Structures are given as C-alpha cells and as structure tokens.
Image 1 (tube, rainbow, N blue to C red):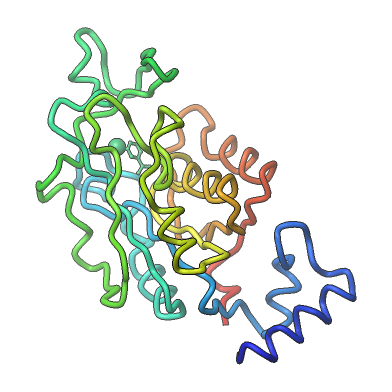
Image 2 (cartoon, rainbow, N blue to C red):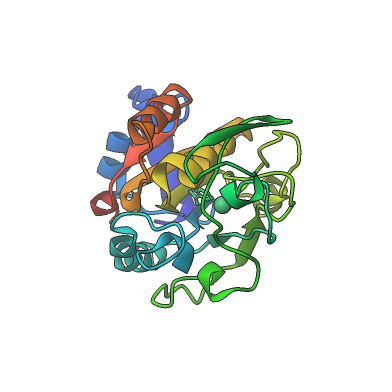
Length: 243
Ligand code: VGL
Ligand code: ZN
C-alpha cells in the first residue's frame, strides 16, 4: 500500500474508533489491507534461530526446527529484518557449569536478580551458535548479538539482564525510523518475550507472531510470558494474518 493511501486508511480507522493505544488493533490492521502488510516503518526481529536452540543443539527447544520455513516466508513480506544471536563467552555466568554444585534449569542469585542456569550453549564462534542453516533471509539488514558480557545474561535483544546495559538495537531502529516490530523465533518464553517487552518499553508497537515461535516452557513460563506481554500491550498474531 502506498504511504498516502495508508495514511488515509489509518485516519479512517481512527475516526471509526478502531485504533487502540498501541496502534491499530490486529483485526483492524488485517481488515484494512486484506491482511497485515508491513511497511517501511516496520521490522521483523528474528530471535535466536541458532543451532543451539534447534533439536540436536545444546539447549534444544521442542520443535524449534518447525519455525524455520514459517520465518523464511514471513521475512519475504518485510523490507526490514533484524536477526539476533545469543552469543556467550566460554564460562558464561548463565551456564550451570560455571556455578559449582548447580545443575541446568536450577536458578541462582546474580547481582541483578534471579538467573535460570542453562546448559553451556551458543558459545561465540562455535557451530552451535551459528544461525540454523536453512534460515534464508539474505535481505536481513542487521545481525545483533547479545549475551557477550561474561557476567551478565541477555534474553532481550534491547537490554541486558542487569536492566541497564543497552545493546544499541533501540537506537538503530529509531535511527531507521522503525515504529513497529514483529518478533518471531526462539524461545517464546525467554528471548522472544523479553525482546517484545523491551520493544514496548522503548516505545515501539510490538507484535509476537505466535506460530513462528516455540517455547522452552519451564514451570508454565510460556503462559506467564503471554500474560506479561499482554499486560504491556504486546499483541499476539499468527503468520496466517499476513497478506
Ligand atoms: C534463550 C535461554 C538462554 C533464548 C537464550 O534464546 O530464549 N533462552 N539463552
Ligand atoms: Zn543464552
């Protein structure tokens, strides 16, 4: 859709009361254009589609491989795509192996709060940390890495777990005049959710494309993630809603 007709449509929808605080309601957006049509001010953020999170990797997400073709199709509908990579040092603080007596999926207290301890995963430069080989997004504009500070984890592509250290992604997106982000990838309840929540906190409209994500689900963490995302205005959509 051209910018002018898009503006007109938005104004019409606003006058009909179909605009929500976070932008168009999903329904209105889909109805306006016969499906979601991301424009120049939208970006797809593809989170951590890396070997480590795919069955056969070091921290496999159940059925994580199923989202690769879905994301490849979605990415073709976006002018702007950003890819993230979990990118840990050896001996990273988020690894259970770094904490004597701790096992994967237990928690510990860090200086910034409670941290889930994971199997060693996504170590910088390893094949485990590489993007899954069938991910096919040649037009992706930025690959942003996170979790590279040894003492601090970063589920979010925007802000590290100390909740202070910025990755630079918000500044990049703002400089590119991106207003709306769509998030897909792994894992729904960790890096996807934290990225979507921080997108909202940074002032972006944020959508999570549910069927283009898979979760780890520790003690109901997928349901809890959707609950907190909904509370913060993150919208849930499906890949089938795109034009
Ligand atoms: C992730 C756990 C640890 C994720 C990354 O990508 O969701 N989860 N590191
Ligand atoms: Zn990690």
